[in-house]
Amino acid sequence: MGGYYDAGDNVKFGLPMAFTITLLSWGAIEYGEQIAAAGEYAHALEAIKWGTDYFIKAHTQPNVLWVEVFQFSSYTIPVNIIFFYFVF
Image (cartoon, helix red, strand yellow):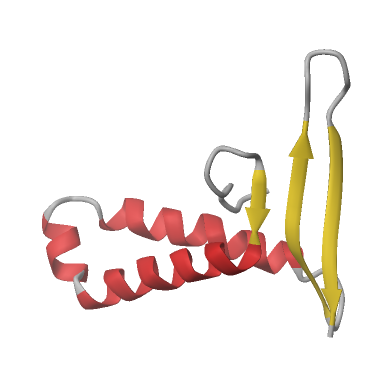
């Protein structure tokens, strides 16, 4: 599905992820030659695509964007997934 979890708590927060993808993209634009010289440009693009694909999928209909995804689990309870979204 894409997207990055925040810290180690199995939560995908939209705003911190958007900030991360923005900075990664900006770094690839500003320092693309140096990243390519290190042989990491394809990895940078793959990381950017992983995050942006998630945001595309999180925009499920006009004026709706899913901004937080939680995944709770324990040894005795099956995984529960709770979604929060904003309508704008």
